[in-house]
Amino acid sequence: MRARILGAGIVGLSVADELIRRGHDVEVVDPAPGSGASYAAAGMLSPAGEAWHGEETLTRLGLASLALWPEFARRLGVSVHTRGTLLAGVDAGDVQQVERQLAVLDLAGVAHERLGRRELLAREPGLGRIAGGAFLSDDHSVDPRAVVAALLDRVGDRVGPERRPVGRAVSAGERVETNTAAEVTVIATGANLPGPYARLIRPVRGDVVRVRTQEPVERTVRAWVHGEQVYVVPRVESDEMVIGATSEERDGPLLPSVEGVWRLLDLARRVVPSLDRASVVEVTSRDRPGTADNLPLVGPTHEPGVVLAAGAFRNGILLAPLIAQQVADHVETGSVEPAVDPRRFRMKEDG
Ligand code: GLY
Image 1 (spheres, rainbow, N blue to C red):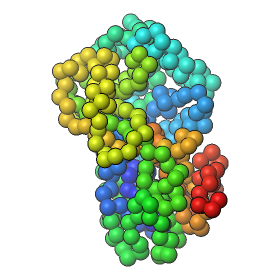
Image 2 (image 1 turned 45 degrees about the vertical axis):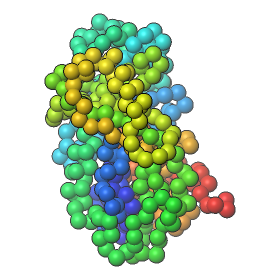
Image 3 (image 1 turned 180 degrees about the vertical axis):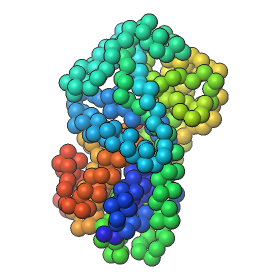
Image 4 (image 1 turned 90 degrees about the vertical axis):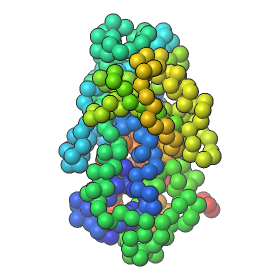
């Protein structure tokens, strides 16, 4: 099979890697590989920490993809940070929010350990005023930039803006070129899908702050702070921590907002007070590729030979190996996971 993949973020590259592994001929088209949402992502592999009422299917997909990560990471030669994740609530209402998440996890049969204030501080002495929370032993993290670099290494010179004369880079609003040498075109262009597919995505902007610190937390902390959410993710192999993320449906240039960054830092330093002594090294803003039902779009479209690997929303890093497997299975056998079948939405202008 000759496949052309549009988009060299973590999803497009994972699809490319999987297809190459299965012996297919692959080309990846992207004028700026790895510079989209994957570049901003904190890298949480956190299906339990992201679980919410009404999103049970997403939790199921996240757990299935989490199970693929150890082998995926081993193949790429990247580390997975396996010290688990703490859920923390600052006040009684916030602890109730944690309880709501734990109720969803109980239904899904996901292990968790409820922790009081003292137990939380015993696990993570650097926490500030926390009323209670929980430990999620199976929610981990990776460095998405390291993952993308490893994938780019593996996919090699098959990635480029227009390496072979089989088409041209496609950006939002353009039609997909299907009259190329490729038998299948996989669209993995994140929040900017081309032509008729653009309407399937709602970009959800996230501002993210990276800091350097001598006092890192041991594990990912996901906190509720008087009804608002913030997370702090330590990197395994450096003194960097990632603080995220705002969530806003706004347009305009990809620049972090003053209000968003101020709010993130304000929330994060209440949870981890030593952040006051950290240095800010980077502030990034990118759009998450959201869908109407928060589930990904993976599989066929109304155009023969055009397949979507899109709409991973808040879970692109977590879901990348599963989406890669689903796309490769679809290309080879025609199989589609009904929950993520893009045809659940109307795609054609005329219906
Ligand atoms: N998965 C974390 C985020 O989208 O902010």
